[in-house]
Amino acid sequence: MTANGTQRRNLVATTADRLRDLVFAAEPDSLVGALQDLAKALDVGIVTIQQAARVLEHEGLLEARRGPGGGYYGRRPDAAALERSIAAYLRSNPTSFEEAVNITSLLFNELVPAAADCADAALRAELEQLSRRLENCNTASDCGRFESDFQDLLFRMVDWPLFKLLTVVTLRVGVTKAGRLLRGSEEAVADWREGRQRIISAILRSDRELARFEADRSNRRVVLQGMREHAST
Image (cartoon, rainbow, N blue to C red):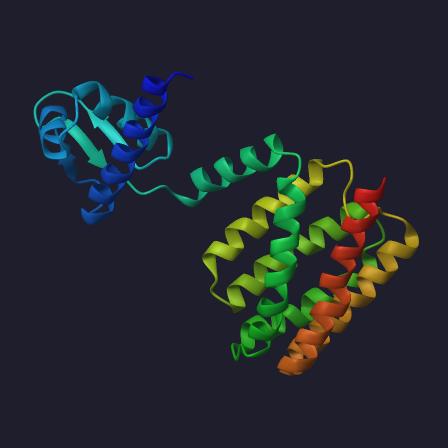
């Protein structure tokens, strides 16, 4: 790429950053500015504004409207749009899935003890009922369905929306990955089942430290071991 091309790309990226600031400074669905006004306010050309705006439109942050009252309107990306974007990134970057699993397993060590603090009787009763399904989890697909329901319940017990988004996407992408950490052997499924039962029991006992210990022993260490084995193959 030529020096002019690099400068042009940097100008568009800088303009996109400044445009993001304007979007988040305004209320959702409000007018950020017309094309000419934004070019003047940001002291760049119309073409630069158009290119920067396309970046934000792709991110779900901006919408171009024509006609009377037209211009660029700020938006906020919804969870579904973010989930699609993250899922696409994980599928297109070979190492990103393992990285995401590593991150979510680390945060799981914080999520589980936080769930042990949940005092909602209805949610705790739901967790106890969910634990009874474990004895019927005999295949990798059974484990996947249980894990999805288990994670969903944990996130209702602990309000961590960003972690939930990353975890949900990682779980769904993991279903399509050939080298999943849970191989599906009888021994692996039995170990997973016993580990999940220990984690749930610690949560129901409201024992934060035990919950953290079991999350690390039955989840984090298993994930790291699986990643090492997968890397060596």
